[in-house]
Length: 97
Image (tube, rainbow, N blue to C red):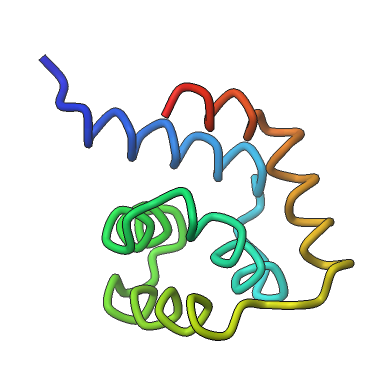
């Protein structure tokens, strides 16, 4: 039987891969963390982003802490990232998790 955490991370990785099939652009990285941070524990978010990007878990965790206290504020880019997530099924993902 698959654990809930494993399913949660797998469904998150699938969402991110669908939203960013060519990888997460650097310009979208902090906005993505800003959008996703309220939906995750810090560790789960860092783990999911690490699996998708190949970046070090600890580096991502520090970036998450940064956006917690200084969220990305460019509304145009936040809207672009949110649109990519929405097109990939973000609302369904939210309801499932």
